[in-house]
Length: 295
Image 1 (cartoon, rainbow, N blue to C red):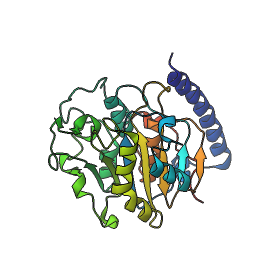
Image 2: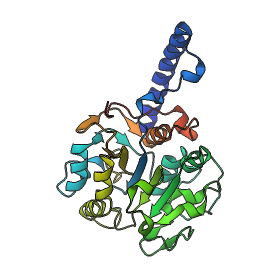
Image 3: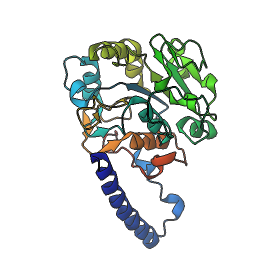
């Protein structure tokens, strides 16, 4: 059994015990079932931007001189020191983070666009009347479902796999607004194969992040907004432990958490940050990220 499987089983047992204790407390205090949702610890930012980089372990980025900008965000924000991906290779992890399931994807080959109608972060957000978009570097054009083009790779864009997510919500990165107040309430940014550290260096990706989203990060610090930086998977040498850094006004500067989290926990946290009442796939049994938020 893999380490992540052992962790998930242990966490399920602990969660079940906690749920029983919470239920007993609810019965004693008269708290109804509708109050049992534990999302109160998650803030409600005005805007959340999630950036996913590629194929690097925690120790290759955090504390590395090759990633001065990401480490500055860590110092001014929060780091999850025990953050894990689900599997290998890349594509299943993107589906897991976006929909709480790998959706049967086991490799990086091209899937049929719109093959699934399963609930996912975008469909839930849209159904709740909130705004969503993805911004994809070197995407040939807004809504294009092409599998690959130059340094663009659809395998890093799971939203195209779902019939309940409008393809028009997938924009080019050139469409990322300069007036950040016009951003959707929730969005993902996908750098291309060089900028995401897949084909190019950690330094290249770090510089791309600073040059392209540094101004947003600064703005987020004073506009109740959040930047989340994570990775799809590690380098296959570190037990799939990945860097995850959060930055913005809702985050306690210089904080960290050594709680073990995975993509499903991050998905759950993103859902709860939007006030959603549903949770996709394995996010339903996941835990919110806590211990890093500003009071």
